[in-house]
Length: 407
Image 1 (cartoon, rainbow, N blue to C red):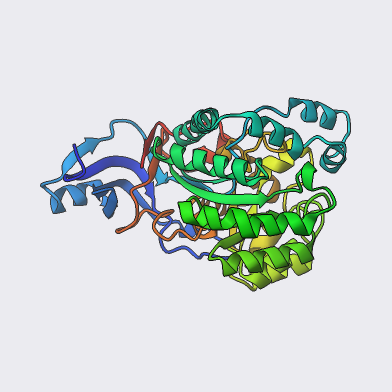
Image 2 (image 1 turned 90 degrees about the vertical axis):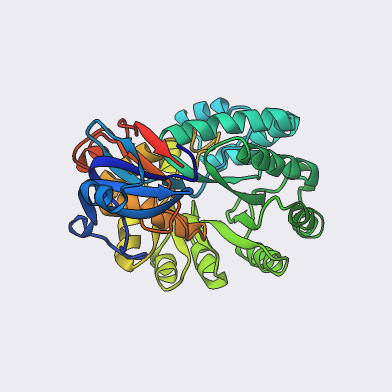
């Protein structure tokens, strides 16, 4: 088979397309579009048709058949819209401190946290960063994640941020997964700029971002709004200036203190991510905007803190996406389906809401309109699980993985 052939894949016990569902607010499993004994026609990496396998076989007799001979449920490929998977080293020391009762902010103030990973990442070569990133991407892909966002943010200098973004670009050429790069140079203040936040943000805006744009390494920026990182005032200045340079934005918001989501919504950011500390004003601002609410259960599991209020966000009318936050410090697990499955039982998200959060709603958080659902014209990013009934997938709480991934 090659890209010039029409390919009919199936029959699947069930094909869940997620087509036609609302982008915002609650969903209901009863409204899931499902084809029993379904199939998919693919041509040139794009979906041509989704219907019953028998009907497609009659309508497309020229198609080559990729026969599925076991029980199988087909879903859109998963999308992880917030990761820090480009890094070097470990933070097992920090994790041990958390087990002794230290908080994330305590560890950061004492010189650990992000700064520990910055030291490791600055010491790593471009080749080393690319190799370790590829290993994480390919593990994700095998577990059904066909698209993932990858942030910089452990370089915190022109040289090392460009090295990280170059590693992301090089990895993108060597994997079947699709990568979306984000420049997170405004992750925290590097030690050498202590007491000079304005100067550091100026360096990013005047030296780093123009070079990122020139080299085509990213068209998105992120900033961490927190007591140990950047204030709301500093973030507003930075995001407005970055927008003037042609960059879209996302925001680390409301992880420990509220207010960041309101700013993200007001500035029209693609997403506000974390939201564990969001209050009603933050939730309302996101619900009344086009900014996606990205919740990160991996960070809650890694830090031992409550989950973001996903149920309240949905009921308020937000577009809720779910991402892994895979990083060496607060979210080292990096298993998107397992985290989404655990979030679903604690926050009472049904199957439709949970899988929407890691498919088409996650695509929206990345401003991607060509994936996340199985319908004609979309990318043929698809994953199949070895069951007859879709409800088995979350029931297994992430232990069941797809047996086949197409991208």
